[in-house]
Length: 468
Image (cartoon, rainbow, N blue to C red; front, top):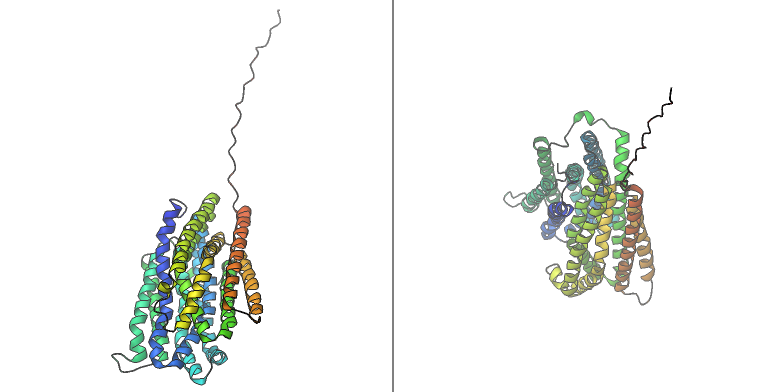
């Protein structure tokens, strides 16, 4: 356990952020590995795996629910030096991860084919996507356990073990993918089923590695079977913090879907350019997001310890560092978008759209960095409802006007991207205001010390004796 209530806040952030960045990049690579190796199987396989991968987005929202709730409550307990409560939250989160994993498996096996029929254009794509999903579902189900264990470690200030496990899992996935998909060395090619199976095996090994770490090395939080009996009160605590954060994830999904929808009138090149641009933008925003994610447990531990001023300082320091990082990448996106986009596509029209998107939307990177930081601070305080409100505001101010603009005769794709800048700035302002209000309500300043006035002793007058 790392005590984040003492020492330099900047040092804590810079210690935790790099492993978080590496972990996020490996997750992105894991999503791209399957697409890369199935590309030799034809367009139907590529389209099927890509469409099936979108289903994982909603599962990630559920993972966010468990992860955010676990981090916030364990960090508070660590700050209070209440190890018993930290272990109770952890073990109840483990029970929830098993429950969510089983529900994911059941839903996946029952709904994979109906889902693919709803989103795919032909029977070949439906079949490829369905087969991939059925073999990929165990990976999605197991990731709930990974999320809970990694979140518990992050709440205690430890991030390196989770990062190393994620890196090793991706390496295993990359090694298995060509063997299982194309039959390298075995002569038994499984096609898209092999892609899903490779991911499931890699995630399973990752879960075993994290489990071994907890059993052998972790000392602050531990598996306690006596605490595995479902406790609805603890579930309510976890979900009250986590559900709004999961809702925020859904809001992002809606914004992305609207972006693809309004660009459909410009053809597939515009949509492809938008897709590439958003992936690159997400990649260069990862360092600022990692800084924000590192600030959450720091704020959580100090909030649990009653160090209100240190919580405020955490926000200020994290916001300044994230802003500086975002400014650097914004300048890079403005001066050399082609450098960031190199290698993603050979189609000139697609790359032109991606470059234009990156130049325009990167102007809101500072505002997005502040949104990341505010969201993480709300998680640290254990109240994520304001995050959902600010995200809903952005959905309303972006989605409906975007659809309306797309009906104009002179509609251009730049219109929705400029609108995105305005709505992101609005969300950042709203997040700052809501955080200020939350600080005023929940961070009670320490009582001012008053200097007691010296007590002046009354002179003692001896009694006067009367003469006898």
